[in-house]
Length: 576
Picture (tube, rainbow, N blue to C red):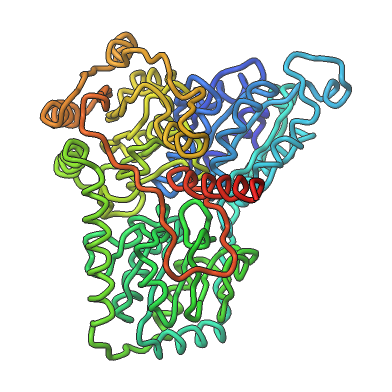
């Protein structure tokens, strides 16, 4: 047993979890925890500029490394500021642990307006976390941190939070030996695995849909092996990118939401979906259905059969489930015609997407792909450039090298990239819009202070481009709140100590981007989209094969058409 403060106990638990990096902001209600970090070899505090940014950075760290991301905030306003980051981590199934302070134990729950008092803070945190806990005794601090981390990492990952009153952080007591609790990973039922393997083995036109759960489980190698064993083409969600290299001949890219891929989905007689909950904003339940027999493997039992009818449901970790399938699968003889037909559709889809970019953005994307070293990470914010090519066309060849706001939130791009760069140490690029950057502008200073290998590419159209497009479709071109007074970002970055360049053509981008990547330090490129050939935003068309009911799209890049059509239909009904 060792005598230590509550702050030291919390940090001792983090060290037992092999945590070496914590993101956060100092406050009067977390000083003992941060002081313990400063006195503990092998663990570093990355000081962020906003609590939401700190949680996003912890999230980006987790996505890039596969490890637990940790952040520390204050109670009250600090914890409230963090809610947007926790919401995103929950949406992304990202293992993030937040330690937050709380007022003194004798003040907590008494409504006396103590500094930063938030008596219902735990209720707030529980709305966006898998697990949230209040610590009432010094002896429980380390155990609460270890238990919360285990919850964040187990099953379908997600965020967890622990709030520790400030008097307990200062108090001293005995703490015993600490060890991380084992992650709970479920292996699918053997009988169901055999049934799924038999179904897949008998298929003549198998298809695999791979989601972010494959990446989270580190199951890319197993997924690729199953695809090769079956000769099955692989569609991925945006979060599933990198689960199979997009250079692989069986990869159909992140196109699960495109009507152009409907012939592939309609033609498959058996579909294996792995690690996906079929989110509306990037998946096929928006308009498309799965007519073939569906095998669904997912860590979250609640998602099996929720969106699409399932013939065989497999509840379990993606890696363990795919390994079990591999052991049970025979090697069927197929002539490759099905995979070849799917590849032709993929190639046509990619060609149409490239054409829609226009010559300037196409040249910029190709230059980015050529210049980026292998293993570089690209973080995309919610912006037109991400929707049009960052999330779909810029190739992803390795897992954990592509990320975006899964909740479609605007603004997380830079702090996600900060965490990814801290955790990986690899070159990290942000595809960012000017509107979204304003929400996380302060984290540029974090990148400078940490001297990160980060290049922020601001695709600047002086406002919210995708919302301009949607407003033009939905309210007949009337625009509200989408045109912004935008600063010159390059001098602003320079004022923060970040090197920068202003770019207005593809050649200028190529030179500046190559210099920024070679320099290895934080850079910002302000790219003037108004000086370049415009992208063509193509609203998602409906497939020829439609289900009986047609839900409205929630994807910002596609929603305008559906909403405008519904408005027209209502107007026609009213006239009639």
